[in-house]
Amino acid sequence: QVQLVESGGGLVQPGGSLRLSCAASRNILGIYTMGWYRQAPGKQRELVADIATGGSTNYADSVKGRFTISRDNANNTVYLQMNKLKPEDTAVYFCNVRTWSGQRYWGQGTQVSVSS
Image (tube, rainbow, N blue to C red; front, side, top):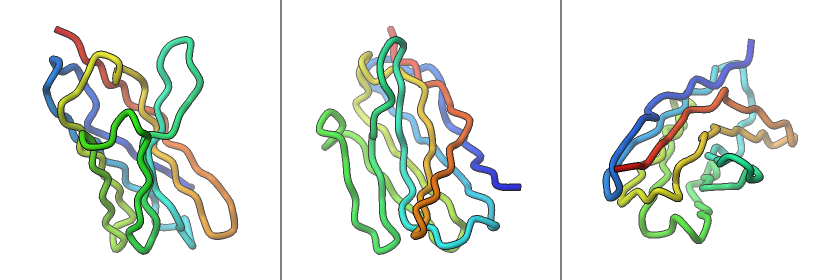
């Protein structure tokens, strides 16, 4: 059974930090990119950041300079370090994996809330 197990969400004050983790099950073969999307209430799901097997990264303009994505290829795990969080970062964050063959897998989502 294919699984993406996310952890690390929660409630944090503005300016604070959180680290999200997502472990993909080992039966997902040929992983190309791993990344994070988010969806705020009433809004469409949007890309936050992703990272390819070779290490190249892609960030949404709204998080550049504040978020850092990294990846452990040996353990099929992707991380998102989120610093200087803002209330507008509040959303459900979803882990995403894309294979070389074009298949996509999604995690169940983890809530990130930024509020004083």
